[in-house]
Structure formats: structure tokens, C-alpha cells
Length: 404
Image 1 (spheres, rainbow, N blue to C red):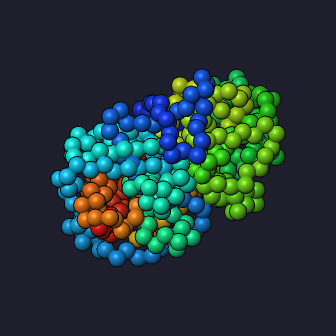
Image 2 (image 1 turned 135 degrees about the vertical axis):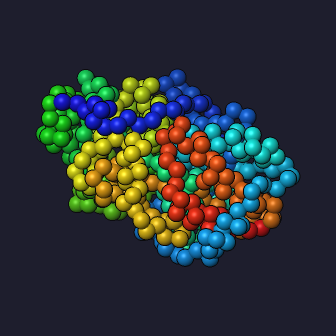
């Protein structure tokens, strides 16, 4: 039988979609009416520089700023002059920046934060090129990127999770189908092609699954969400999902009916229009998923339990990872505690530590420090979690490296 929210604590809801034209996107997500959807701040917005993101082993280069020095270096306020900061990147983080931008402007009226939704890959290229001040990314910088752009750092600002969502005929969204990495890998390679496949029914006793064809929906842009999803598939099914298919862009298998989508909104729209579809989006899109009457899977973790991305489950997963390196590049996939949600991540700001002026550097340091302290007031509205205090210390140490 289906799983109730009594069995799996309900994730907090509080997301909304806003329409905007995306000027830095590789392509536009189509709405049912043919328009484009994105996230925009009503009057003020932040633009965070190029996003990090590619697969690969996390690096561990030591920080050159001590935690004590970092605390002292964090400016309490930006410079007095009028200033605009720009951000682009992760669509998963976009709902948070739409809240951060006006909140920060309300606190410091001299700073306008201008944000444009794109993707983690677009963010990193913008950061590297210096066309944005801050890049938002769901994935850490790869060793190759760190070697190529020695001035870039990835700074965790919050903790998020990735959902697997679906549109299965006859299955109520409240059922929360049970799925794990092994089965999902076969669904996305086409080895499992129908919803009533024995491998799926075995995970969902008592649920009457239809014989509908499975329509895998994946991101075609350079996406941090793809990095997280493919990392989970490889962690749980290394023989079924090779490590070469971990990354922000991957060589997706093309089973019959597979759909590619650009941006998180487009994933939700694709699921709406395709019966039997399954895809992945961040927890900041739970409200649009509910509005579209789509289901959210309970995912199998490393202990064999099936959990939803509740606050408790995200925190339980976070407790599995106690050795975040000084440069904060770390995978938080498939945590080891029994009630851990298996796909969580740090949400990163990618910035260049060498800025054009001391005032610009001060403005960036002030905003980023605010984001990991006072800015946590906006996290619950998008179902994100605050950083542990030890990670705030590491982030402040990285923020202190930004100079002009």
C-alpha cells in the first residue's frame, strides 16, 4: 500500500513560481502556453557569479585564512557607495535568491542584487569570464576547473536536496512510490520500460501500478541537479550507471520516449504533458510539483530505508559527513545514517577571490557573510537547511579570501 506522510514526515512547503525572461540561459523553458518561466526578484535581484560544477573527485586544498581571522575579516556591512551585484546559475537556488535579494536590499539599501536564472554550468562559465559577481551551483568545482581557474572558490551557503518526481496514471501523489538507485538506473537506461515492471512492484507492495510506458525526463543543459542525480545512481548502482555518466552534462541513454528539458521548470512541464514520465528537480520546487499534481518518490538510502527529503532526513544525512575539507568541495550523496535522505548537497556560491577594487571585494564579502548568517531566515520557505556552525566557519574562511 502507499506510504503516508505519517510514515514519511512531510517536507515543508513554501515555494512559488514567478515568470521571467532568462537572458543568460542556454535555452528557454517552455510553459504550457509557450512562454518562458524563470525566477525573478520583483524590484531587486542578486547576481551571483559563475557556478561551479562538474563531476570529478573533490579537492582538498587547505585554506590560507584561519577561522579566527575569517570571523574578524567578515565586514558587518557593504561599502557605503551605491552598488549592484550580479548572480546567475542554478535554477534550484533561484527561489532562494528571489527572497534574498529584496531582504538584503531592505537591510542595505545601497546594494542592488540582480539575479538571472540559468544553470550551474552557465554559472561557472560566467564566474570564470567575470561576467557575473557570484555564481550559484548545486555542484562543487571539479579539480580540472580549480586547476584552470585558480582564483575561483566554491562557498557553501545552505543545504538542499534533490527530489525524484513522476506522473504515473492512477497513482495519487500522496502515495510516494518507493524507488532506489538500482531501479532508477534501469529506468533511465531503458532496461525497465513499464511502470508495472516486477522490480518496481517489488519495492511497492500493495500498490497497483499501471502498465504505462516509462518516459524518462532529464536535463539537457549543464545542470547541478544532473550532477546530484547521476551521483546517486552511480553510488547505488555502479555496475548499472558508470562513473563516466556523472556530471553536470552526461551522455544520456536514449530509451524510446526519453525527453530532454532545459531548466527545472521545463522538467515539471514535461512531466505534466507526458503520462508515465519521471524526472528530478530540487526541493525548492516542491510547491510547483504539487500544483502540477505530480508525485514525489521516497528514495532508498544506503540502509535500505525509503525516505522523503524532510528537514529531519536532510539533517540526518548531513550528520554522515563530518570531514568537509577547507575548500568545501565534497559530495554529500548516499549518507550512512539509517534515516538519511540520500541526495543532499551544499548549495554553492562560486566567486573569484581577486576583485577589481577593495570596495567590490567588501560588498561581496558582506553579502556572502550575511547569506550564511542572517540570510538563513529565508531558507525554510524553499525547504533548504542552514549550514552547520562548523561549515559556516569554513565558509567565512573562504569568504575572507576575497580581496580587491
